[in-house]
Image 1 (cartoon, rainbow, N blue to C red):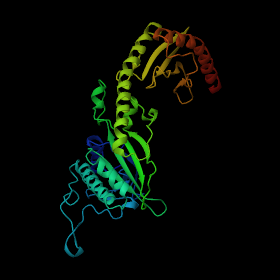
Image 2 (tube, rainbow, N blue to C red; image 1 turned 180 degrees about the vertical axis):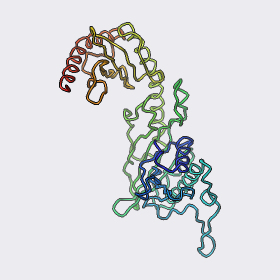
Image 3 (tube, one colour; image 1 turned 30 degrees about the horizontal axis):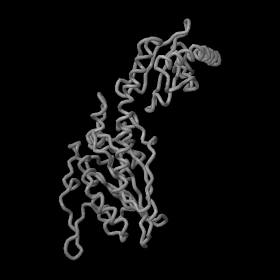
Image 4 (cartoon, one colour; image 1 turned 45 degrees about the vertical axis):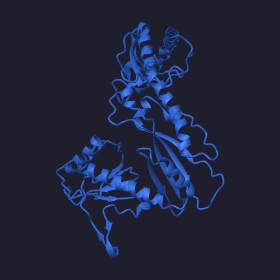
Length: 372
């Protein structure tokens, strides 16, 4: 993320936050408080949605943090003492040092911890027997987070983010450069019910993962097991975790399947110009048809060979009006069966490209003629 438009002191704080946080932190948007200053000085963090407000005219000052409209009762640095008075204990804001680039990181993590405690306290005060039972059964799990959502025009809900799988996915992928530990969470959303129901409805369920995990495994491909009548989270989670563990192991094993296929392409296409050496999701080869030279890009899905690779051709001799090499659209309409041997897969792709490259050459020539 580019932070050049912020004052240097503020940019250092943001860069340190994004590069050193043990948790994945996302900045949603950035803007300026004064349109005449020429500098950005505020941005939004998705925790769940906080605005961080600096002052470009006074960048050495500590920032303000504006919480969401549902959190008007969240006063993290105020402690009630006798007779309803408030005191402000020592905290990161009260001891702000703009020259220390780690201060923003410390502040955000301090506020996040306090916010999690605040949400846990709110949920503990909800008069809902089912929620109280659910909370009591999963408190022993480490890393669980909970959040209460309410508003004037929407019903009250309690959202749980339950970390799954006691396995280090990062260490399972040789050579990966993931900076954060890859996590998969089950998001469980319960409506807040004030009345007793003999058979409560199933909660809404959704799997959520770190964005980087998509290079190895797509949680969108996971079919969640059904939530049976009378079930609680403590009963639901073991079966789900067993299924996920098997899918992760399969996904790791498919890296070698893709790697062996890229190696099998060499007799027909030569050595790749470049290839994804970690996840084996991409590879590029140089090809020629007569004097027409072009690149063949292979894009491999995580479910390869069940799902076939997508191809793209890129001319080495023809360019569009912006000076960029002309590329084909994504190609996937060619013969394929996951039951074939790799050599047969390569043979069918090669046969397809022998004809397709002629169509692509014709398209490149016509495109350049239209530009003249």
